[in-house]
Image (cartoon, rainbow over all chains, first blue to last red; front, side, top):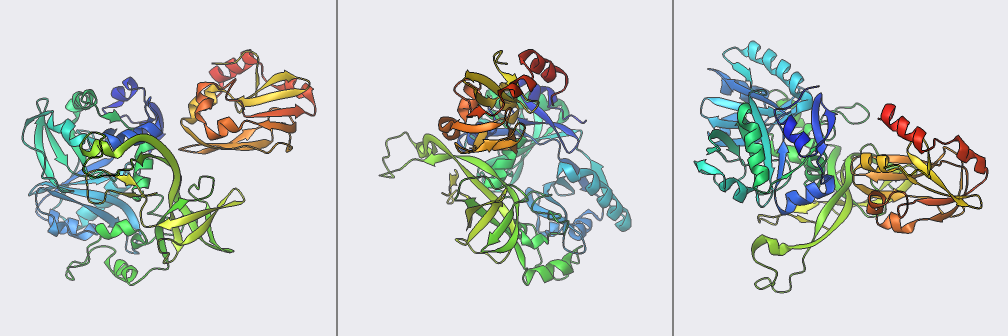
Length: 401
Length: 129
C-alpha cells in the first residue's frame, strides 16, 4: 500500500490508518470524526491530500489540449487563478472531476481524485499523444499537497509567512509564499465549503516540517472521515457517488449534479471539447438530478437507500450520513451580543448532529419537497433542501436547520 | 479493555449474568473503539423475542451501520434508553453504564457457548479485524 510523505506525521497524531484507493490514509485522528468536523468549522482543519493525483501540463499545445479534454474553458483561466473542471466522456458522463491551477503562464497543474489518478493519467497521456506538442509530468510524488480550511486558517498562515503574501481574498486565487524556508504554492481552494480555505503545494522534502508548524499554530489534523462529512454538508459531489455510475451501473449525466455547472463552460461555440454535444443535450433538461436532503425522522439514510414519493421509487441516496454542527448562538442585538467580538461570538459552544445527504432522483424536485427514504424496510421522512450549509456571504458557515 | 465477568460473541457483543436467568448485553470496548464516534442506535422493544446470534439492533457511526447480534436467545426485559440518547456512554463505560439491553434467557446454558474473557482476548489478538 502506498504512503504519502506525511505518513509518520499521521501516526504521530494518532491517526487511524485505512486503505483508501490503494493509499494508507488516516480516516480519523485522536479527536474523532465529529470533533475534527467541528474544529474545521469553528477554527481550522489540516488535511493531507497528497494521495490525490497532480499532473503538470505544459508544451506548445498545452492550452489547446486542456480546452479539448476538460469541460471548463482553460482559455478563460488567467495566470494566478484556478477553477473547477471535469474530464467528460463523449456520452457526457464523468471520467473524473478535477481542479485546474495556473500558477504560471506556461504551466498548468491538474489535481484529480486519488481513486482515478491512474485511469486519468493513462487517458490524458493517450489524448496528449494523439494531439502532440503536450508534455505531461506526474508531480504526485515530488509535490505534497495539504488543505488548511476554516475561519482561523488565514491567521495561521499569516503567522508563518516569511516572504510573499497570501493570494487575494477571492475563491480560486493563487499565490506563492515562503514558509519555513521553502517555497509553497497556495490556492484559495478546498473541499469543505469553508469560505476561508487554502490548499498548499509543498516540496515533498519540506512537507513534514510545514505540517508540524501548522499543527503547532493550532490547526486540527483532519482525516478522510471528516473530509467526507464536511464535503457532504456543503453538498459537494464525490466521484463514485454523485459522478460516475449510479448503484445500478448506469452512467450519471454530469449536469445532473448542480455543482457541475461551475465546471462546465459552453460559452465559446468554437471550442469542441470531449463530451460537448452530450452536455449541450443535458443542458436542455434532464429527467434525473442530484438534490440535497435532510432527514426529519429518526435514522440515518446511507448511500444506496431507496427514495420514495408515495408508493413510487423516485431514486436513490448517493451519499448520506450524520454530520455534527455548532448550534448558532441566538444574537438578540447584533452590535452588542456580549460574547466577545468577531466570528467567535457566533459559536454557542453547543453542538448537535443531523442526518443529511445527497440523492439522485427523478425530478426536478424543488426545495421543500417531502420524500421518504427506506431504512432496512422502515420509511423515514426527509425534506429536499436548497443547501444544508450557508455562509450568507460571510467568512463562517452555519448549519441550515 | 475486557470485562473478565462477561462472555463474548465473535461479533463483539458481551453478556453478563444478572441472576435469575437474566443477562445484560452490550458491546465490547474493542468494538466501540473500532466504530469511532457512535451517532445513532436502534434497539428492540421490551417484550421482543430474540434468538441467539440473531440481530437485535443497529449501531451507527459516521462511517457505517453495524448490526448487533444477540449473545443469547430470550425475551427483552429492558432497554437502556440513556445510552440511546447518549451514545457516548458506550465509549465511557461499555461494560456497566453502557449496557444495551437486558434479556430473560430462554436457555441460560447458551451463555456457556460464548467465549470467556481469556478466549475473547486471544480472539482479538489473533483473528479479529
